[in-house]
Image (tube, rainbow, N blue to C red; front, side, top):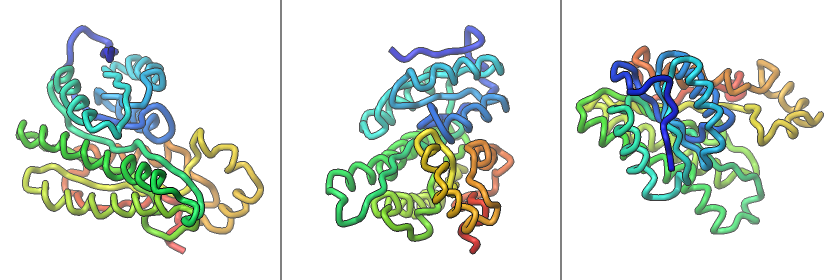
Amino acid sequence: MDTPVAPSAGPDVTRPVAVVTGAGRGLGRAVAKRLGSGGWDIVLVARSRDQVTDVADELADHGAAALVLGGDVCDTAMPARIVGEAVGRFGRIDALINNAARYQKCEATSLTAEEWALTLDVNLGAPFRLAAAVATQMIAAGRAGSIVNVGSIFGLAGVSGTAAYAASKGGLVALTRALAVEWGRHDVRVNLVAPGHMRTELNAAELQTEASQTFIRRNVPLRRVAEPEDVAGLVVYLASPDARFITGSVMVCDGGYTAR
């Protein structure tokens, strides 16, 4: 059963609340910790609750309350569950960070229909369904809100071997702009952050190879890959009221890779 982890018996209704998917590792984890240390309460969403229980403990150390939810973002019942439990626990949702994603690199001619469909659903279908559910709640509550979609420079620049991933992230760019226009009259902002080459638990070993390091030195003006913390600040900024007049934007955070 999903249970809240909190430093106090009840929610502080004056604190903003953010839902973060893929919160167990990489960028999602960094964003959740940055938000928690900045005065937010957090709904931590991951495939397994075990991936985020330690994040919840860290948030409690900063005085932030956390609700831990485990489940598959592709489950069509998940958006209603997330919104229902978040509002039931905290009484509000102020921001959604659509971070959970699937990455697979293979030649397009080897990509199966099943792999294509799964990647599109994880990276585009699921973010849409959750954004729609969260925006519905924000609009009904008459509350301004922010939705930040995590895209990729692969959705902006062609990269061999990433057909499904690139298509899903490119679609997320278009979706972000469409939703920003549609929901702007309700003061619900929708933006996208497109990270470049970023170190995660999944690619750390690959990034240590000489070939990868040579590629980065030649193609990234800042001559290094990003750490999740390098991108988390931009995501948190867009989620916050400091970005209250920014919507429909695609913000690249790639060390200059796409500026070449």
